[in-house]
Length: 521
Image (cartoon, rainbow, N blue to C red):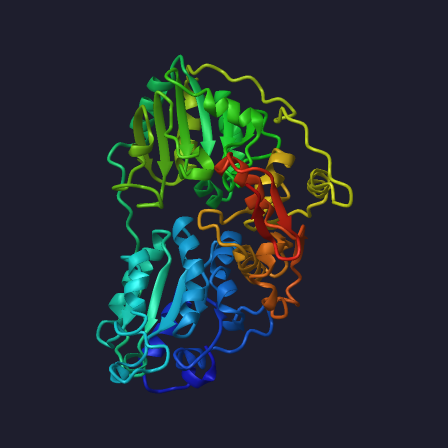
């Protein structure tokens, strides 16, 4: 907070808002200033020193800014705030809101309203019901996470409620009304509320006993999802679990970050970009098997719109009402019996490991995974084009320790994991695929770099994605990002899908200069 507000004797809403954000650990604000948010941003110094612990604001285009809090959180576990003014700026920012919701990432978005005194006077970028009706738009996507800060009397209460939502891994939108925030307000003793998740009635012991009974004489398969990646020792724990129970492990695109490369029971990625061994294993699951899911949302790119087919599915999660759940459960995604257990995933796994040490489980043991997890040969590169399989393989030997990478909505978010087969212990890779926002990975990469400036950050993006963020490269030029631009002047990710979606259509012809598809029938 800069001296403009820190030295002010009058306690106003903006001061309480900034102090509360600071208590939440927010020090990085990104976006573009404007008439609607200038009275908020004037209290925050420009971000000059990326390593500074002081709060700072980085000016960067709203579309990219909307994804920065996501990468910031994935890299550090801390929250950041994206800011935009009224009109189209708020809508550009909100593209990131969608992926924050779909990937259960706590992120803060700050947008303003036009003044109440302007209603009926046709103001520019009218946010009222007569204009964009922006509050209703935001609430249609985030029904419980939009907080209009329109009264000094309710400001602290609303901020407390917003903090609860963030604790539940939900993004929140703080909607600013200048007259209310520029008015005197009282400072409560506490402006953050503790998050109390419901405690599972059955104890860990009961869960372990049920698990022991149900896997006896059955094959056990472990499905690792992206929620598991939020625990610091996740990869070690999953390896220990597989070795102790001698069970096969498969993982989702982002769940790979909770798996060690040398896990001898690791059969690979499933579904989108999935490895052949993993797909064969997952498709073989049936009435004689038990599936243990570690926070893996059964989304389209993980289970391909199919239900869990095991005789019984144990689903472990610590996120209340995560994306995809119906009435706080994924029971609707299971063909067989279903048991959901709530609690910290590392503690739940440790409980199972402790139970196995006391008395070994009676599940059917899995063989070790083969060295090669694929059955198909990679097609040769066309003349004049890079051999992408070789590129991914060579980079896989080179990643610096402690790195993080992001795959944009391009060929790399499907092909990279197929080629490399197993996660690399030196680098975490994330893909914000559920919203399919092309170019969003650039913002995520910027966020990761802002959270830990010394951490190596890499981005794979396509020429189509590049068009959506290339104008922001100047603002990020001193961050030290490494960007791999997969440029073949065509929408190749679309081209690979069209023969499956439209098999009756004959050969497609690409116009390289525009990336348009011309379909010859």
